[in-house]
Image 1 (cartoon, rainbow, N blue to C red):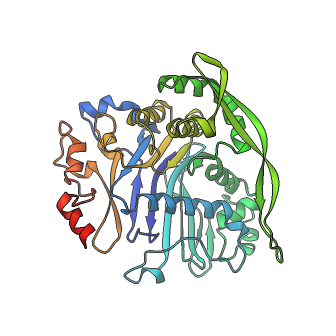
Image 2: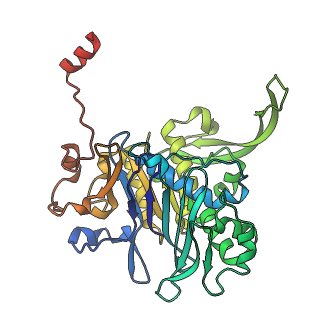
Length: 410
């Protein structure tokens, strides 16, 4: 599970922000009714979901984009060549392009807490560290400093200097150690590969087939609960032409056949007619199906997932259903962004699960939760307060007919 994530100097994020999954101390009747929204790990209450709310261009997607970039650095940096430039942008003002960016994640893997961090520019990795809490006390696994020196805890990484010799300033030590088959590094690498999922998948990709076969009956039951009249889904493998990347000197675009999945649906009282999921089902049904394939794997296997605008195109009750799936799980987690103000409801989410994202005068993204507003009482209407601008993270739009006429006449 994720305990916290910190980001600094990524995209619209200037100063350090924190996404905290450790639950605040809220002992109200309303919070007790939302007990399913919290799990416990060694006595520590941890949130199952955190929602990011705010106006367009406030930085919600940038937060998820920065987290995704940092996780992909862990998974891919051992493949980097010497001339590579890292695919992110620091904050563009106040001299920040010349400063380093920082990522930290505090997480639990195989029932042990780890704290992993690194600092980098677009050209090189500056520092890196990994700590763990084997008996409740912080202990060093390794530390990599800006001058290229390393220090190690006792026995945590086998033959660490061999890994150091193969780690450049374009490569994370953790990533390299995993590629060199160091057991602890491989365990943590698998966590970022398999347990912390960075969004949805293309349902036509062959990798979806196992999940569909495993969860087909649960998917059908979920679609029934969501009031669709789909009673069965079949999947077929088909071959489709896909463009091939041109080689030097090639002027004509060429194609090759690739295997894809095609889903066919059967509707109630129409058992003899099949519908193509891609072509004949509604956008909402397709989106729900895509989410269910991914999310059922998450909730069944205690994983974590990020989803940007997860409820776009879905009825608000379907968004509720998706959150209920997470909250009904034993220990899965969801970090999501949304413009759906119906979710800003303390009868559905605790105050510490509702996080506002806003931009201040210099264009930097800041985050703060509803819990930070000490004068807010749970008998108040949080959605109404948000729309009225009480929590700041709402766009001011002068949409009067008169103002729009002035634009059109300008």
